[in-house]
Amino acid sequence: MTSKVYVALRVKATPERAFAAFVGEIGAWWRPSPLFETTPRPGVLSFELPDGEGEGGRLIETRAGGKVFEIGRITAWEPPARLVFTWRQANFPLDLTTEVEVGFEAVGEETRVSIEHRGFDRVPSGAARHGFPDQVLLMRLADFWRAQIVALGERTR
Image (cartoon, rainbow, N blue to C red):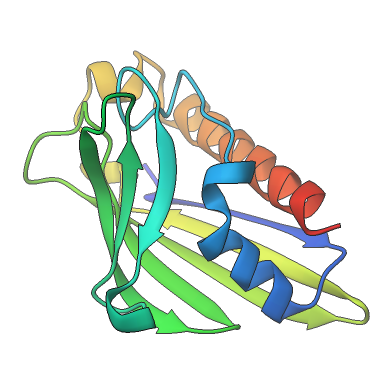
């Protein structure tokens, strides 16, 4: 199985605006998915940035009642061009993460937002794969990220 999906769409925003919305407003535009939910009862996503800097920060989900689930850690922080973070769903084994790289590239008056999610070849069969064959799983994962970029684009208008 290939270990990654890649999706890119344009949004009507500058790279600075798209990056800021992706990081600072993720809780407002994020669309939970029953296939790729991070926790069984979705909460609100946010990035925690230590001292305003991103690298070493966390992507978290805060559920009703205040319980926090760490989805991942920021491993690359290059505003407004690039962001990389680890990704872990609650149904992954404890020692397993995948990696998400988000790019923001100016194209005229728009920004191409690209997402590469890699490492799904390490995800074992079972709950995290929903019983899908490899190709179907990756197609669904690509659809999931495409919907997230569309939601981000709606937020940046």
